[in-house]
Amino acid sequence: MPIHPLSKRSTPNKFQKVFLTIFYAVAWVTYMPLKLLVTFGSLSLATIISFIIDFGADARKPVLRSRYWLRSFGQALTGKLLCIGHGLIIKEVNPDARDKSAHVIVGNHCSYLDALVILDRSGGSAIVNQGMADFWFLRSLLRVSRAVVVQRPPLPTDSELVKRKRSETARAFGIEEQGSITQLMQKRVNERNNGVDWPQIIVFPEGTICNSETVLRFRTSAFALSGCKIQPFSLKYKTVFNLQWLTCGGLQAMFRSFLNPFGVIQIEWLPVQEKRVDQSAQEFADQVGGIIAENLHGQYTGYKNDDIGYFLGWKSKDKCTQEYLRDFEKLGTFADVKKKLGKGDKYELVHKDVDKLLKE
Image (cartoon, rainbow, N blue to C red):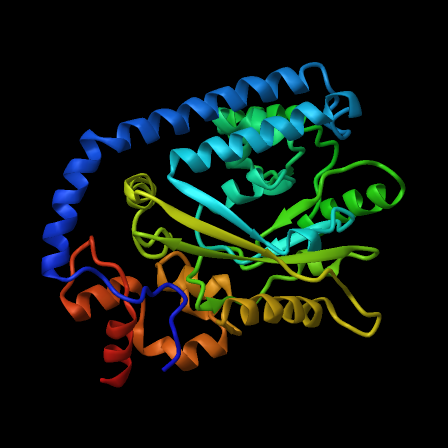
């Protein structure tokens, strides 16, 4: 049976649910308040440090060399404090294989906590949208890391508030002209090849979060770049509670991460890859995606993030890939699955239920 990219191995049985209820109650009055304090305290500290580092700097250029050490220290400190706040230890495999000359680093995406790993391992420039860049708690952190901000094209129907926000974001992040993600990254790559000291660009090419047993087909934006070296990495979570954000709500995923007492996130650096002259961007993306999936002992599929959007009810069925419809059309959407199984809003998709519905 194929493995659905949003399904978990299992959910707690009745006995485990009773135990977890008691455990959660104990956690709320013991270590969880401390974890929350450390997490939001470290984010506040990081915001202040980022503002100081970047004060008066030109966002169109990398952080000045004289301030670079403080930026690196601040990012590493933030990453470590946030990991402590979540009770997580980061284990780095093949650290000597980390190639700082690579323009882009790419990996599988299984949790919003993936960002902590990259922060702890010295950071880089993430690809973010307008909404994330506008979030005041993250703006200074994203700006000092020189995040690549992608703004949607303006529409005639945009309100004055939307226009003002676009203008403010463009000014804060030094956006002089807008383009596609590939165009924005290519500009960075070209300047880096000419000696400009831009940070590495961080990309999660699946475009969404899924379980580590299934890797979605990589989108091609980073793999269409010319003169670009790409280093893949894999992320594996070993925690008491499953921290993958799959079919549960965002708040539920966040609080589950705080309730988790401890765990290990493993990041493994894989060999640097470069596109051959005779390769298309999609062929190169599939090559790198296959390397990561093999390292995870998972399957690299033809499913795309549009398939996830359909299953969660965000997109229409005509956006789905033929591979996904071949394997999972019978499921319908997540709402259909819950209706067929007689489950409520708190239900999370698991392997055995997928298998059951596909066999009917």
